[in-house]
Amino acid sequence: MAIFDDVVVNAKSAASVVSKKAGELFDLSKLRISLASLRGELSKQYQALGEAVYNNEPAEEIDAIKAEISSVKQNVQDIESILASAKNSVTCPACGEKLSKNAQFCSTCGTAIPKSKPTCRSCGAKLVDGAKFCAICGTKVEETAE
Image 1: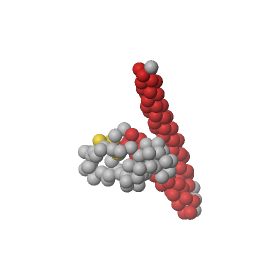
Image 2 (image 1 turned 120 degrees about the vertical axis):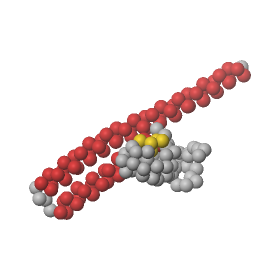
Image 3 (image 1 turned 180 degrees about the vertical axis):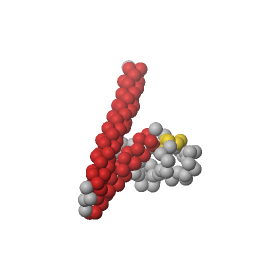
Image 4 (image 1 turned 90 degrees about the vertical axis):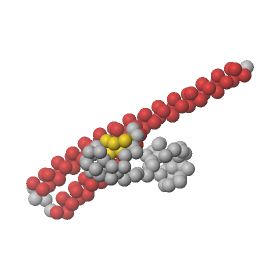
């Protein structure tokens, strides 16, 4: 019976790993869909800005559209950062080149690459240095060797 018990334990362990990976892939897919939606929203906001400028709308309305564009662009950058970290790469803040995660300077334009704080593998929130659990979703932080 001990062999049967070992098989059951191993099967449960394998099922857990597969389930976890499937969940991570699902989360990444949701992020990609959100990114596409945000890029569509960004295009709409740029179009609205162009129409507002063309129609000589008041400065307050133009400023409101610019603020919305800045907010959407920040959300796009945050999601791109999460997706890049999942791919073990970073994006150059100056030229957009995809670089290895360990890059300190961009190989295309020479810009210094800032080191980003680690993010939660579950929800993507930025983690506090030394955190053992995510403050947003409670997911345990995995130890990484650097």
